Length: 140
Image (cartoon, rainbow, N blue to C red):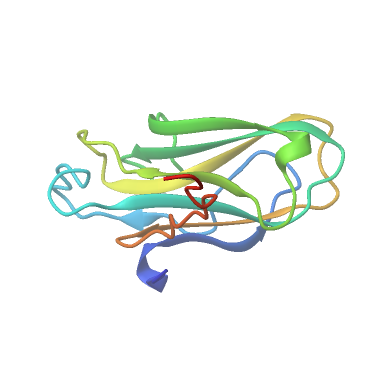
């Protein structure tokens, strides 16, 4: 899977409280719809197992401000603590077609006790890894 540093929101970002991604992408003065045209995927990975929290909600958001204040949520997923283990894919989906604000980033919302450990990576890519192994078709 190809990861372009200019399209990366988080690279092993430690989440110890609700936060926005380390990097917010500036789409320019007239951003338009980044979800149309060539397929573009949002991938969020857990790179270090989380401790203490109840769940983590990961959201793709856009807004006029770099701090993602008054943001529009374009995609979101709540992940239970049991699924926040190193190597887990927290989100892997097509970027939705929508009108985006000038700045695009991720918000990580902690539910429960603030974690003392846990890291994520999040980025946009054209070629997400989606290969799966299936059992052989026996008795064909």
